[in-house]
Image (cartoon, rainbow over the protein chains, first blue to last red):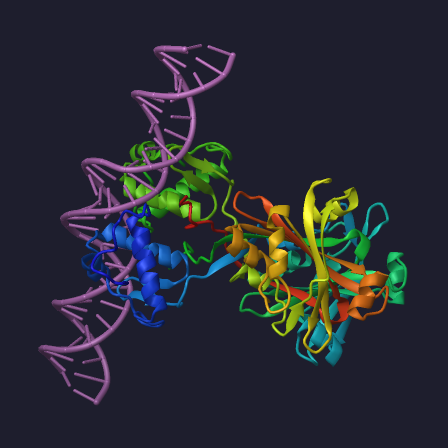
Length: 261
Length: 261
DNA sequence: TGCGCTAATATGTACGGACAAGTCGGAGTG
DNA sequence: CACTCCGACTTGTCCGTACATATTAGCGCA
């Protein structure tokens, strides 16, 4: 069936380049073109499918956009993955949207200290036990006086200086402040969401009942070489905070970045 | 500068189609082609840049992959966004991973009834007040007896029949069962996460303390024409459940889905 | 006014050709 | 044996053409 000299009847209503892509995909899935090997060259595919180079390249482009293959000039088309990976993708225009802190709220720094992570905290932050961080803590309140959350921000000791730039008039996210000051480019953000309940001290600071449910978000920011340079933990009163996401059906894709040297 | 008769010198080392894409991008950013309007047609761009249709289309394809424009046969190229949007993208290979329910757990249906949404519930589900749904409720437990969560699944009345296929041996997600049985293709999934505390009835069913914190997830599944066909609400005991996400810097992309009817 | 048909226009698909540029192995040379 | 260079091969870029198909506006007609 697959790899026939010609792709079936051509009355399917599907474009030829899609038929070819499907056929190649099936061939990859069946092990005709194992992962890690090179696909037949364009010229060979042209003969195989009795088609034009343009059409064959269009088919290969589809596979590339799906993340199935990777093409490289002068070398060939490398098989990366055995099957189509329809992916649900969430889009966030900027890391800022991962915060979604209300604009009419402000962060107030109440403490800044240097800490060495104990086992329990290290596990919660997914950081290595014994590592040293500068911790900046305080509540975020609406201008109206309503509490937004309590936040603990952990940054690398060498970035401790940014503590003085936070709070008050500066409503920019911490990662952005660090990014500008030290040239860290955010490459990845990990978020963990869990529920808990407020212990006494923080409940008092936010003016909520002790033991009332809280929604906590732990965000880990990876910088230039994948190194985690900031971890923040925010604890929100449950009744006025929720976190929403939206995923859209699509393909994974890796394309159109600047290969140019 | 932008929209010159020819794109600068062509000695930049960058491919012509990228130069054209950059030029169009600059034009969009400067308001020459406002968001919501149509870009000049391919033929006009060919004249403008003194290039071939193939090259112009390649440039437009770049913009489309970046999410800047959307192309539509017979209509034109619509400007969607004013600028390149390096986006943080979360990839989930399949909607199934949005569940991440442990394999060694099972859903037990304890009730199935037809409900008309009251204002409060409708607001929580983000559905219209007064709309009718079939609600399937029950706990999900580990094989060991530990509670995973309590789940309320709301499906369109015409899909009520799937209730009989749930629970017990069928550990597949509800959306998948509906998808197969009725041909709904999941196009979008919205998730809202919030914290709450267990009320008596469910606390008893799951064997947790009344009033203990819970992590709740409300998932809304959009089907063929964007219509919501399933809403599920899961309430997890906080101490043994967290939700984690990972975002990677990349391009937003929307391509190669099956437009085919 | 409202409807349906038609023509113009836009993008999608598919064919053809040519040259550029990167990769890799083998022939040739020291 | 190690190194360089060259040529074969592969994908990238770019040009040309033709026809298919979806959309829309406008015309004609009831």
